[in-house]
Image 1 (cartoon, rainbow, N blue to C red):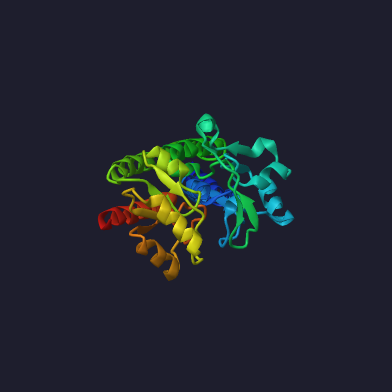
Image 2: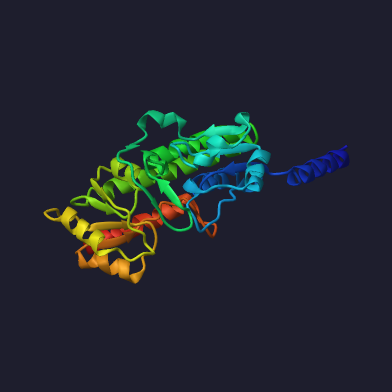
Length: 291
């Protein structure tokens, strides 16, 4: 009997190890990270957006959409992120809007500015601000929504434990950013519309621009920024990515300290969302010290 039970246990274990991972399709890097952190080897993340563009404005091919359709779970960011979703035929039963719990707290963007950069063509930043996860409390709520969507498909005890740990990490980050932001005097300059939830969550005033990290700012852009910061004690300029030397010099020549604060729409090289935010924290802390 002992031999039979042992053999049965071995067969069961082998079957479990050979089980197909749960396929989870996502629309951005933070959601991909949350899924990987919560599900580990039990999940396969589907995120076909190219790494050299902005997933918020990406237009998937028919083959890309087919990948989403084949997933067991499809996680949306909500807040108008990945506008292609509203025109795609996706199985409604598989969809989860991870920002649904705080829908009433989304930020409406004023104005009507359409522009283009990179290979994405023209797009507008009007409507609703999209980078919800930069409010770490919202990010924790998106983790909760992700966990609920995965619960029927993964081991509930393991999932619950991983969810608790990840949410605790995000709440600690939230506290740390709140304390750090209290040290900033004057508004921060945002190189691009990305930081609305971050600045609101941590009590910061901001001045929003449309400066690209890989482009030299025009004399008109420099003059406009100079006029907008006149009479303020602002010192921090947030870049989405590493700026080219000419762009970095334009910022420093105005007496500002450039800080790379990657919103994380795409995460690369196996980096988790919480690791990226810790790096952003460290760079912002150094920028504040230098200012």
